[in-house]
Length: 355
Image (tube, rainbow, N blue to C red; front, side, top):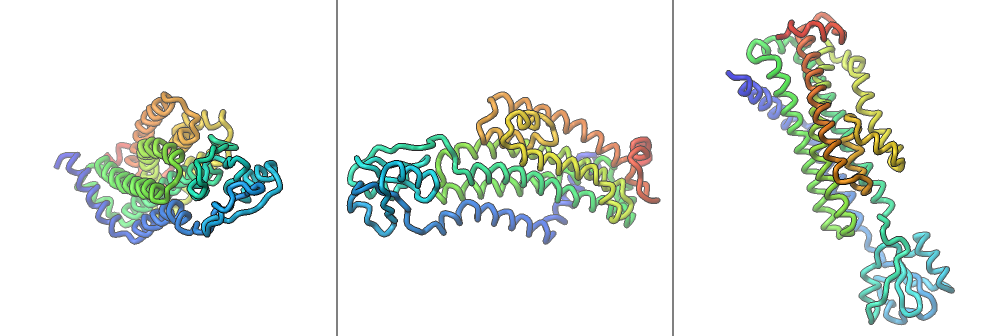
């Protein structure tokens, strides 16, 4: 059996086990539900009338429709204030002139007998909820997927080591083939899960008739997020496998994985809290552990030049190669050491024991 065939065999075994795992199935369904709920359901439940402020007799009887709720205001200043405060979706001034934040409601435009001019208060602004939700969703997906799948990799390696099954496995396939098969299978599953969520979210936005401006921004961000996610996940997955090999029992995983947990959690919270800090986000978009989150968010916010994601992705790829070697060395040096938890130093020195 060649090494490639051994990798295929191990990966196929991992895929079969994982696809029957109720936790994996539940998490996939849960994430898909969140994707649908955040895109389609708001549009379905937004069945109330469109609230419109009207100055004097502007618009006349044309606005007296069941799908429009008219609110009389004394002057143009009061109308503008109502739109800015979010009390109404639009205002109709004398002329008539439609006043809106960034998009005039179609119900108002169709109700008026003539096509009125539209004045936008913030024409380039994205809905504040969308501006918060998209970056949060990208950051959360990478964090929760890399963390949960990573812990599952570590637990799987430790379980094989604790039950001594690993001794049978390494007698049949090379240690590196065993590691590569595990990482390849979990990466494929994680990528498939994220790609499916991205597809459902994109379709959901189109069904919900989300603004074209938002779709045009989300599309490239998701497109770049997928390769960033894949490289970032592979880099972390090998380290998680190494952590699992350091532990001799399931109870040891929490302690052995603490440094790696920090490497996953700190970038997530740093990006969330520093999203509005341009300088910090620029730095974070070039650090391998945070770039899978920071760079797609900068692309969504249109804060990155065209060359930046390419450079960032190249740096992430280089870092992934380095950490693949680090994780593989730790994995090889500790996999067959079953007499208690293995220290990182011993695992690094004893690579040959698992060769």
